[in-house]
Length: 349
Ligand code: ADP
Ligand code: MG
Image 1 (tube, helix red, strand yellow):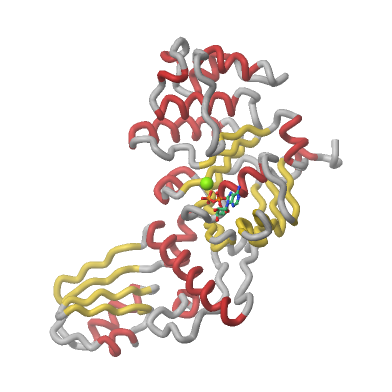
Image 2 (cartoon, helix red, strand yellow):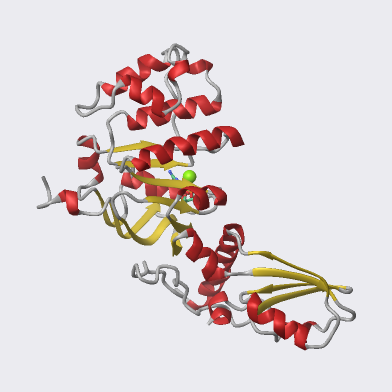
């Protein structure tokens, strides 16, 4: 044993982790977070954000360029060797020719502490498919087999890298029900997704990543509340965009004839001020506020910061927040020339 009491250590420690591929591509750019035991956490971000690199690093499949990675208080290699972690990675298929039951049985032999064959089949919803050859399964059924294999060694920590990509809605629903059953048994689950609704529905905490950096880290509600962007639509005769841009909370105004679209970080303040202008406001519609808007706002803000940093060096760093205020991760840095898109932090503060 490497530490005095590994059971007391977090499920995952990621400290200042950098991964550079081929000396050129920075996939992880000083990423830090900790995941406590028993949590179900989503790593949410667009393609190329670094999600798979992060998960592969925790599974010991990749070595970080610098920084510290610990899983269950051990190095990833130790945790794998101890049979303590399981994963569904994005790459790799299933061996052809074998039956579902044979494959699961084979994987079970790899672990001293293993789930029973019947339990694995039931957990993954494969009981009726035990005799089916794995090359004759649908996409959703194949994913369930890979899920069963990941669970064979009764892992304390389960990594799922975009496990429901390419599954239809019904298959996704069934899959997440199985994951929640595993989580309810105390298993720590870290999953990568770019499905915002999946993170919202299945994770108690969401770590938003983009361009290899952590943009936000909090509960789904905190992330939604933090950006709190609303899209306010209405029509008014001859809208004055500069007046509308001056209303509290407003970050963007788009006028197309009488039709106005306003983005606001504080709709509660914007709306009374809008009516106080004394102009007719017709057909008012307030939308947004979902995780989708939050992610768009977070990642587009990140893009503008990247452009700013091209000119002025590293513009800002993202640090893991203390648990008491996990969602306030933005610095004020933004390109001052982007007057039509002031940073969300400035507007909210
Ligand atoms: P995600 O899983 O969020 O889509 P990845 O971790 O797969 O992101 O990729 C992060 C970045 O690293 C991307 O720019 C990707 O092109 C690059 N990358 C991933 N794997 C490799 C590799 N083996 N060699 C070089 N670049 C890679
Ligand atoms: Mg990936």
